[in-house]
Image 1 (tube, rainbow, N blue to C red):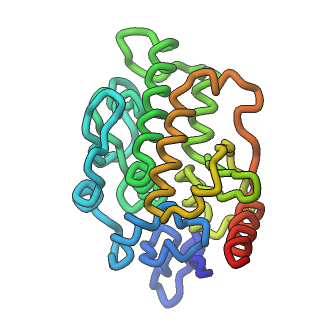
Image 2 (image 1 turned 60 degrees about the horizontal axis):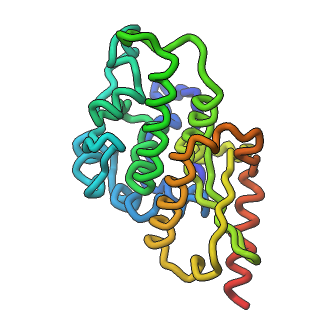
Length: 260
């Protein structure tokens, strides 16, 4: 597996800046075997010599990429620091009310967020809907800024959005699908000492005979149903922790099982 060897800290040799982890790596899909859930659309950018532009992110997005409020998703530029007040500062409500996903240019975190929208649109829309409803319940109108305190539901939503994983399980096999865009980002940086907030989803053995496109669509549908159900966030054990190492073991065991 290829990991970026660049350091976040720029070293200067002969007065020339060296590359940093903020540099584009067209081979990002090779950073880990766990990146297979974002491979179908991620491959589009494997020939890019530089960061995908917002125009490209919007051009290549799948058809039917919409919010639960029925708005088409557009990736828009986040300019500088976020506004302190006003709707533009409210990330999730802005998505729900306008369909606009604020996106920083040349940024791994936000690039992977776009890829999760590409591959798990129903689940992202369900998360966004729950974020909006949870926000609306505690925010004062007219909205000017996010409330100082957050609800338990908002914490769970954020944890799964950033570092979530769906573990598809039959009686004998398990297959992890990384959902959290921050997890993809950290793996690109070479940080593998991670644990993911994981939801276990039961499936039949027939799931493992589907092709990757069909599997991702199945996971997206199943995950969206779970995430849209508020009762999930009232459970003390809604998620369990799954390490990157253990997730890789599941994939290894799966490949060995299929060889039998």
